[in-house]
Structure formats: C-alpha cells, structure tokens
Length: 266
Image (tube, rainbow, N blue to C red; front, side, top):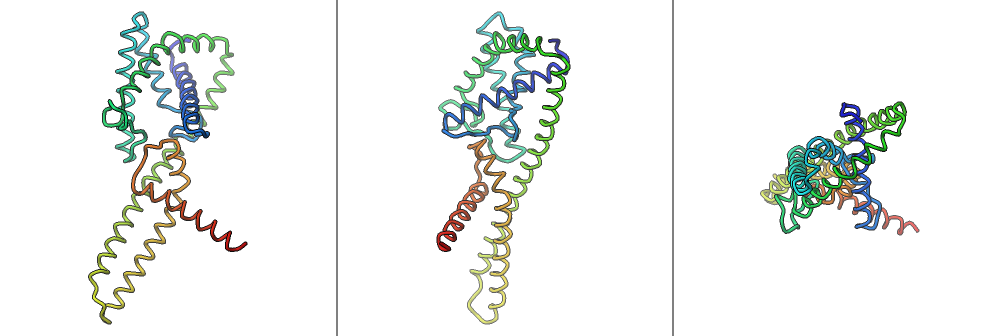
C-alpha cells in the first residue's frame, strides 16, 4: 500500500484496535476479570495507533540495523508516552497511568521496563508486524476496505467526542465537589464561632440548613458521576484524587444502604 492519507488512517485504525485488544487481554488476565481499557468506550486505543504510525514513518530507515532500531524505538516511543501522559495530566488534572512504583521511572509517566518493551515492539513492528499487515491488506477488496474503515471512523469520531465531553463533565463535577467541600468546611468553621446565645440561634440554624443543602447538592453530583468515574477507574487504575475516592465511596454507601433496606423489608 502507498503512503497516502487513507492508507495511514487505515493503519491507525488497525493498530488502535490491535492495541486495545493487547492491552485489554493483558489487563483482564492480570486482574482475572474482563476490562475495557483505554480512554474511549469502543475497542480502540489511539495511543497505540498513533505510536504505530510514528514507528511506520520514522523507524523503517533503521530496519537493517536492529540495535539502532531498538534504541531509536525505545527513546522515541518513551518520549511519545511521556508527552501523552503529561498532556493528559495538564488537561484533565489527573494521572491516567503511574509507574512510580517501578524502580527506574521519570515522574511516573515512563519507566525502564516499559521503555524496553517499546524498543522490542519497535523491532517486531518494523521487521515482522507491519510487513505482514501491509501484505494481507493487498488481498482485501479496496471498496470493502473503504466502507469498513469509513464506518469504523464514524463510530470512532462519535466515540471520541462523547468521551471528551464525559471526561470534561467528570472534571467539572469533581471541581464542583471540591468547591462544595470547601464551602461546607467554611460553614462548619463559622458554626464553631457562634456562642450558644438566643441571639445567634437563627444564624446557627441558617448555617446548618445551608450545610444540609450543600450536602444534598454534592450527593446529587456524586450519584451522577459514579458510572463515568467507575468506568475510567477500571480502565486507568492510577487515576486518583480525593474527589474520585469520594464518588466511589458514596456509591458503596448507597449500595450498602439499599441492601440493608431490602433485608429490613423481608
């Protein structure tokens, strides 16, 4: 296949799907349960797709020297992983993966063991994987290929937009929870200043009512965010903030309460 835009996009789709399969199988095997990894809802991991395109465009020139190919792949793909991790942290204010528990790492975004894997994968990709994919695609009917890639592309674009919107909603929701927590803390501090006098009774009641309303508002946000936060937490166990823990613990509290109510009604 020639290196035109459609072919590069085809490779991107194929390797995004392959990356999702690889990551999901690995994670599911480790955790003994089925896990849908990745930022999107669908079976694509764009970080692998873009990584594959980078390898395809820039590593082929080193195909005759495995040592250089391995080294360039290790460094180049580690830089790519670091950049993606950095951007996600800056945009969404949380880590989507964290290698801090690995002995040799850089700010938890990349680690030596993963970088070595990138180096090995680069060699395998250039020498074996991509030549095989390129050869097999020659036997696919061009019209059918365009239709399939077109349909997947539409689904991918819709999924990407939806995932970005949901992630932004999670970010905004967690920020609101943090603001409400600060408001509740402020109200509680104000309550401590009041002396038990009749003249302050109305002020105390007013503050207590305000705190109760803030807690109700926070609970509504917690319930709304749970499904999306739970999905992201399963896909990226490293994401962790005080507000995320609060969302998950609130759901556990609701489940326990519902269970107790059912037992009482029996």
